[in-house]
Length: 109
Image 1 (cartoon, rainbow, N blue to C red):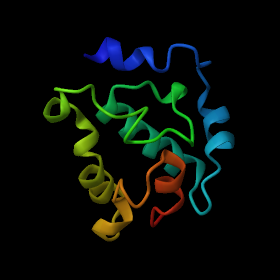
Image 2: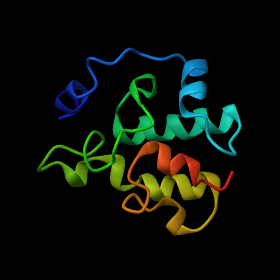
Image 3: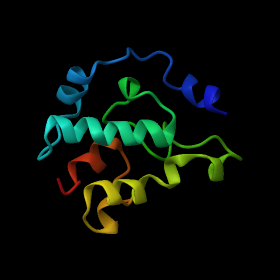
Image 4: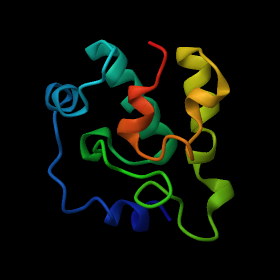
């Protein structure tokens, strides 16, 4: 399952943490907050953070393979992020904030 999911990202260049901070350019977040956010996304989705991009959609690029929805950490991501960064549950709604960039820009840093 993990290998099939990672195939979606195979053509992407792996970005360094410094490049990721510039690419994600969170509106209010510090570089350390951006990297922590990406570390949590990496852990829950099994996608290396260097391959993640602002436009990655939770329902498409980061979505679990069909049949593996309950074995994929993306469903836990809102709860994990809320525990880490605080705020309201709606701050982490993956439907209201469909891309990584959308979600990161709305985090209550």
